[in-house]
Length: 317
Image (cartoon, rainbow, N blue to C red):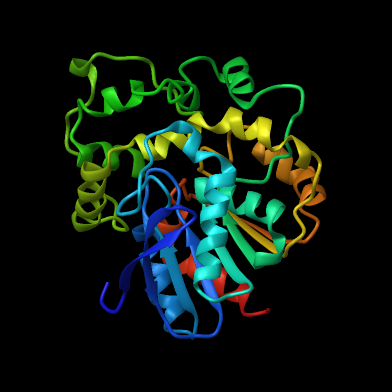
């Protein structure tokens, strides 16, 4: 990670840790997912900064070395998008390229709904833009379709998931999540600590023990509550975003997903993309890339390929 500069900026009432490299006039802003950090973009930062881009990757609110407000209501989409807008302003930029994954992708979609003027073009991964369903709260839909043990439903009660996570070594927990290749919906039945796995996991070539150690050191410090609060704010976001029901995403977009990604094989995503409905809701969608044999953490698993996809898209603007 030589040459990456770390600093803390004050944005939207919180302290945010930012990793940065590159001196180019165009900024590429990277937004990570759960349970990740700025570090998830390490490969893209090094490669794109060498090609003339200024690469900026924050730890989002509630993660890593950024501030972690304890209250769930401090994690609405307005708070998170507000953080990103303030960060862009602090960089002295009118517009930036945005590259995002997982929860970062959801944030990026909402950034494009609320402040499209801030986004030059977007490369999003794993999470498609699904239009707001005015008749039913998100968690009610998940419970109806997948049951109470669906991971998003299990994450709703404050403290419950944290309590279960506490019974397993943080490094092992992160290995379990980051290396999971089950394309089906994640189901987490309630278990006693004695039933939790306690065996070593062999890492794939794209993830090292040093990588895990970095992630674990930060989650040991911050805990998981900040990241889990994003899930706990989903219904509140649904309520607050009512005025934007039916609004299209109108920035240039490239979308990348793996065919083994749980998000591709649940939520009706595959049919949503193939039917053309995704394009209807994101009319400036220019390309959808489905990578074969790739699971959820695509920006790490296929780092060189993903970097090339990003570069080939943003260099057009």
